[in-house]
Image 1 (cartoon, helix red, strand yellow):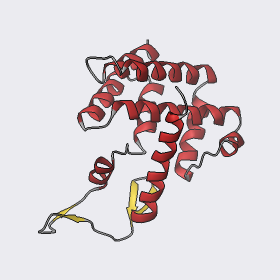
Image 2: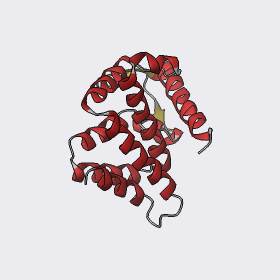
Image 3: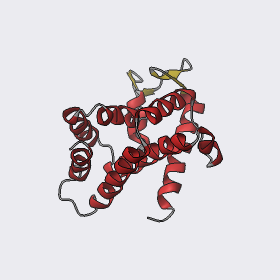
Image 4: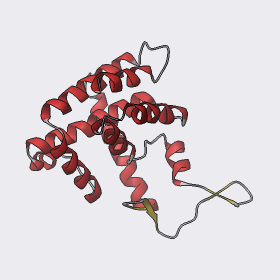
Length: 178
């Protein structure tokens, strides 16, 4: 609980904004670079990918939350569970993912109440994000969103004692899609 989660989400958002300001902007395909080619190593032959940057900074790619929610909305258990495992095996912090996903669901919930509420609570969204949030706020009821949020808040708590790091998230998926 507490305010630490909100601060970490705000920090996460600031990191994303700084990254985009520095390296490019987003479009439907992810990142559009500004003609910069990042290279690694002394030989400067290997290009550094966006995934490398996200991994180095410990960021979760912005498309992960809407993609994951898409599996939940379409009741695709196999893809949702596979997504959790793929995210975990690629080195994503499952606790940070759960926190970010709950924040994403919260934005959608706020949008269902009134789109202006997002602005009043200080949420900045890119155009693409606004479209996705709007689409999901029409596809999901407030009760469904609340149920999902509760499942993932519980999963986040369960991460502290789970012998298998991704297990609480898998159980949350199964709980939501039962």
